[in-house]
Amino acid sequence: MKGLYTIGETAKLLGVSTQTLRYYDKIGLLSPCHTDNETGYRYYSYTQFHYIDRIKYLQGFGMKLEDIANIIHSGSVDLLLPYLRSKRADLISERNEIEEKITDIEWYMDYFTYLNKGENIENLYKVQKENRYILSVPCFYKEALAKMEIRLANEKSKSMYADLKFRRQYGYKVDFDAMLRQEFYPTEYFIYFRGMPDIDESLYDIIPAGEYLCFQTQALDENWDIKMLTGYFNNKPKPKLVLALEFEDNLVDYSKAWYEIQILL
Image 1 (cartoon, rainbow, N blue to C red):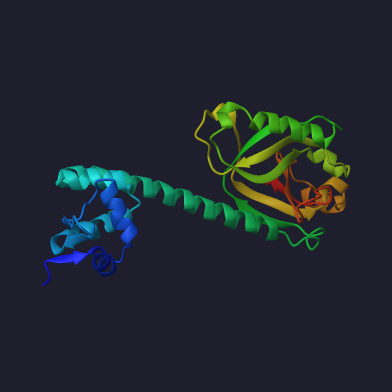
Image 2: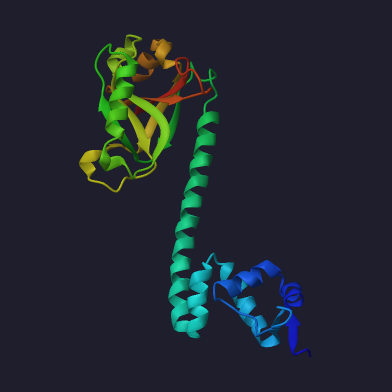
């Protein structure tokens, strides 16, 4: 077995570049065991190979070379283990963030494909829903939709909501009696939180879990079958909660957007 290996031989054997080995030397991480004073050629010993391999391995965890230098020069695992624990915690946090983003993307894909637009305008169907958490603002009779949107934007921009995640779906709580007059009258305008927010309960509202009677309509056009509603609720108590949830089908104009009307039974 050779005693010394040139920097080129070492780089080839260990799968690193000669520039990398020179940089290790420059920052004091690992110096060649011998440098020829006349030629300036650098040589590494076989015993140094495992150091280079360990450096590559730790870099694979995303550790900084400065930290790796401190660990290797200490010669003890007592310094390595805390770094590994810290890096593991960082990676777990990154993984959780990635998984949340994947879930959000899947939700958003479903948002654009959920409705069979126009197919259920004269059909009632039922869906079961879990608790939903919303940030809402009041609406006033016959006011412009733009005022509701500005009011909600102002509320959402407050500092207590700065670190919270929202789902980009807007909805309304609407007046049932007005619907029976074929009139769209929102009483509240809201947006979903991603999940149950970790803030004081007074700062958000809950749409309760339960069975909802649904139909689809272009709500802003006030286009739905009144007889369908009066027929279903004949001799039944008036519902206490009616929602209109917006489902966009384009990225420009929402005025013709389809809505799912959800009536809590």
